[in-house]
Amino acid sequence: MAVPIAAGPGTGGDLDGQSFKPDLERIEIELLLEGIFRHYGFDFRSYAYASIRRRLWKRIEEEGLSSVSALQEKVLHEPEMMEKLLLDLSINVTAMFRDPGFYQTFREHVVPLLRTYPFIRIWHAGCSTGEEVYSMAILLREEGLYERARIYATDINEVVLQRAKAGIFPLERMQEYTENYIRAGGKRSFSEYYTAKYGGALFDQSLTKNVVFSQHNLVTDRSFSEFNVILCRNVLIYFDKTLQSKVHGLFYDSLAMFGVLVLGSKETLRFMAHEDCYQQIAPPEKIFRKVR
Ligand SMILES: C[S@@+](CC[C@H](N)C(=O)[O-])C[C@H]1O[C@@H](n2cnc3c(N)ncnc32)[C@H](O)[C@@H]1O
Image (cartoon, rainbow, N blue to C red):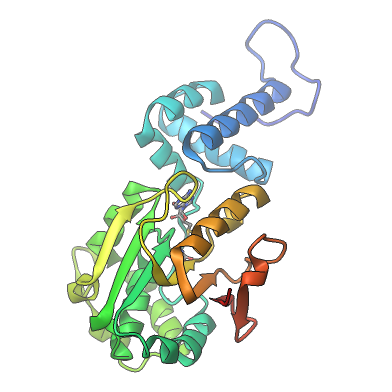
C-alpha cells in the first residue's frame, strides 16, 4: 500500500468513504500521538509531521493495516506493537563513543573525581542498544576504575535492552567506532574488545560483569538508587519542557551531592528549575556537577 499523498486541506472531503482525506488523517495522527503520550509517556506530539507520518505509514503497511486509527487500536492495546513503533520512529539511534569529545573530557575532568570514591554508581538512562554503556565500561577499565563501578543501564524499550545485553554490534560500524574510540582518548587497540561472531562484532562479555540492564520509564518510574554519575544523552530532546523538567527532578533526587550529570550535546539545563543546582564542568561538553 502506498502512502497517500496529502492533497492539501479541504480536499477529498466527499462522504463516500473511499477518497483520501488529509484533514481527517491529521486528526487520526494527533489522536494516536496523544494516546501514545498518555499511555506510554513518549511525547512525539511536537515532532516534524511529515517525518512522523511517513514512519507511521511504514508500520501500517508492514502490519497489513489500512489506516492510522487501525494502528492506534493495536498500539494502545499491544505493548509489543508500541515497541515496534518505537524502533520505526528510530529514536534508538546511538553509536559507540558517540561525540568523542565528551569521552575525552570525561577522562580528563570526571575520572579524577571518581578516583576519590571507593565505589562508583553510574546510571545510563535511555541506554538504547547499549553502545554508550560498552563505551563507558571500556573507558572505566582503561582508567582502572571498572572493578569499583556498578553500572545501571536502563531504557523504556525492552527490545533494545535485549540487544544491549547480547553485546553484538554491526561489524560494518567498527571502522567508525574505532575512529571515535581513538578521538575519545582510547588507550589500546579497539579491536581487542571484540571478536567477529554471530554475524557481528561480539563484545568482550567481561565488560558487562558489573552492568545491570533493566527496564525503566523516565516518565512514570521513580528513582531506584543514589548515583555518582547519571548519563542521559539524546533522550530529553524528545520530551517537551514540562516533561524535561519532571525528569530533571528525578535526576536531581537520584544524584549524590557533587555527583555528575551528563546530557547530550544538543541538550541543556537552561530554564529548568534545577539549573542553579549544577555547575558545568569544561564547557561546551554537557557535563554538570551537582553543587547544591
Ligand atoms: C536516541 S537514544 C539515545 C541512546 C544513547 N543515550 C545515546 O546518546 O547514544 C534514546 C533512547 O531513549 C529511550 N527513551 C525514550 N523515552 C524514554 C523513557 N520515557 N524512559 C526511558 N527511556 C526512554 C529510547 O527508547 C531510546 O533508546
